Length: 244
Image 1: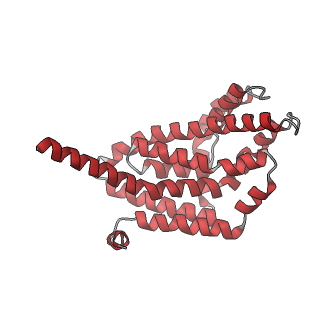
Image 2 (image 1 turned 180 degrees about the vertical axis):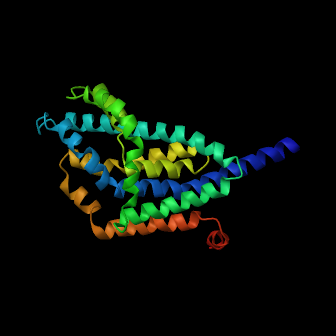
């Protein structure tokens, strides 16, 4: 009886964790999708380098190289999320767990302000990874020009460590979940969210990038992310929201 009760408790706990994670995953997707403009500034030149050498009539080959590059990049985001999530797990299992949740909520609000174009202070944290990038960048440049799918995949995996304020703030937010797997999933969702802009840019799909850059779309996405941040903040408002 005790075993069955403990199994039911564990199953219920896992279900609650997944329910809590769903809005966070949606936030990560929105961050990646609407933050693609910033990613374009960081990777746009590389997108051109990947495709300029390929004739326009070879669109299928161009698409495969872009897809391989972005798969590698997203894989590096998920790995970084897993690693930093382990540090978050250590903090979550300490008296600082509540503080971790508050930090997660505040980061979501800050990222919502960034997406809406009302505050860009998050980009100031890009300097945190410049020391690491000095060692990775020479290896990434050796992958150019990209002539095969494995080279494109490896280039993406290396380029994913490029210092980026939006990626770093997303990593800090993911770490605040206090679960390494959840952190990896959030960064995976964030990476997938960046695909439409970067793929569309590489394939010269101007309509897609123009739509995602519209001010109204960015403000709506930013407000939604800020709403998730407010929901994440500990307090009595959560009981009211869950009740409705």
